[in-house]
Length: 384
Image (cartoon, rainbow, N blue to C red):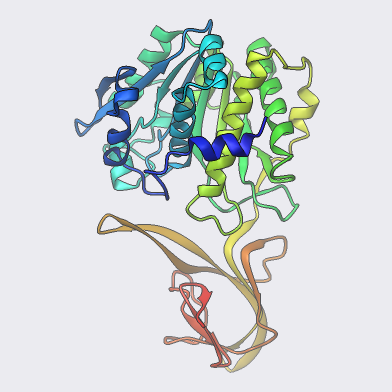
């Protein structure tokens, strides 16, 4: 199966980049080809509609939701790419629709999506509200779970650029987790199903992004939705869309999320899950915070009249300004920084650091500076 070709044929080209809002997805949901399978299942804190998309007649029921965190949009894009596949009339689509019934919530947190925030309009992290159910969005997610009675749950998220695959120096482009169902992090039948499926997905993805798949920490927190659904006996998979080199818009990662989704359902429909492969899951390296967006090495700094050679790093802040998402680089740390990596690295070869302020890279200062007054950096990158 040509997975990349299938992605290219079904990519939803009307949505791209990181800032995906309700206004971006409503025209898709209102298409003649889709709208018969679309419903409004409730409202957000600010009264925005929360949509569902349900399709298929198969016995195995799959529940997927995205943008529980408003600023995590990569999986939303991939989910619409997959929805396009389900509607393209191909043999593959018909096979999937006869094997599965899919229930999708493409954007659970439309208020957070508009504000580009993790939390909802009440400043509540919906992924910590699975027990108290204080928010309308949390109640909707849980009500669908209880009514639909899924056989598998897919909890779709983004993760920050800071995560790498253990100490390999490779970014965690896609990460997975089979959440724990108890404090002891034991493996019961339900969790084993999720573990086995992730192991199968990992084997597929290693052909595309070898060494760039991570495993999320499985500490138990019953307030998290994945842990709750696993506790309730439904195999649950957490997807985390991460960084691919140079892909800050997450358009490349989007492809690998699509491939992961399609691979999941191919494995399930072909009953191609190998049992008792817990070791293959545990051999996926854990995520580790080892990356910065920018790393500058061997920089000479005149500090109180003493010249030192050191390193410093900068990180993008994703700032929404006039409804446009801006990536603004700020200095975050100066020092040896051993064991850390930069998605962009520059060896200054002991060139002297200068800026318009103190001639010292200060925390929270914009990454605008020069080296030996010859090489100039604006927003973290060299200007030609």
